[in-house]
Image (cartoon, rainbow, N blue to C red; front, side, top):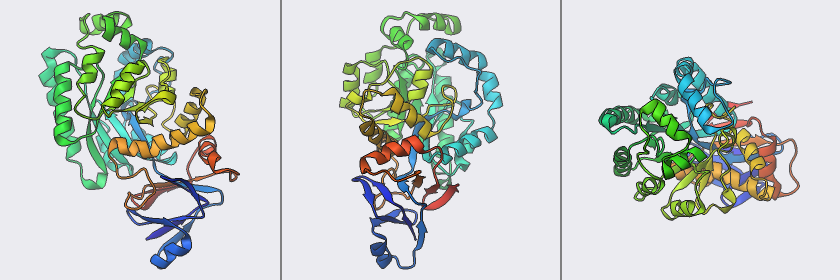
Length: 406
């Protein structure tokens, strides 16, 4: 048994002062140190540095490790030139992205306080790394393929990758999951099969949706930059689905939609009515010129995620949160900071079905310590100063065991 003591603790009721957390693999209680020692007199007392805050471990719901080799190979600024550069450089980037590089990025996430992440896997190449990393990993096996002629082959490959993730041992902390690439790249028959499979096996489900202006124009009218793209690479000039058909395919199962920056208010309201959620990737959306998700008017839960290094410059959750502070400039900054912290802890855990994300009894003891240069005068400022000042967290606990520190 351990007791972790800090100036403040972020709980579901907000920031509490002069309290401590008792935990082994799970959180046992949040109370004063005096009261906890009466219950657990033999517990190891761990005192944090002055001006520290204990948070639940942060959760990055959407990341592509397979493209971690990218630094300057891909073209940023607009979605379609970026996509063309992905096609042109994909093989080289995949070859250069070995296990060592992906593990280094997992370590970088850990240093920023990410204790769990959703790995979007197109080929299954990062499974071995995800088995070894100390974080919890929701392993999203991605389904892609819009040509009905190859549907059975592509689905068979997807099933084999899914089975591999289902066969990982409990010590790996892997949760198998399903991802559908996008409405323009997956045939409706495959979408329906994947949704049914997720529902039958109660697997987390994710899908990219309405990321770019080009995607919206293609799905609505069969025109625009995607038309030339599909004619060039796939010898077709007709989309396989439309926006409404794709949305309705998920009506029976809650899904974590990614981006949605080009969705209308009516479409976002529909997703909310169906119990879905959104992964918000501020830097990726900005770097690819896709637009801004209006989180201030969302009626559905959202997480904040880094996406992959194919469309970002780091996998640090605090880098992402600082970008979100700047992107959503019309919101009161303290209110926004609080929403962002909740999005990466409470919301993210609930969305991915993980028993963490909150500091309360019976939750898994995934905890991080953030140390500030000074203590804010007002509780209302703690979330904001945590985001602004944190480059690396001071300590990380996963399942009650310390796995990283200064």
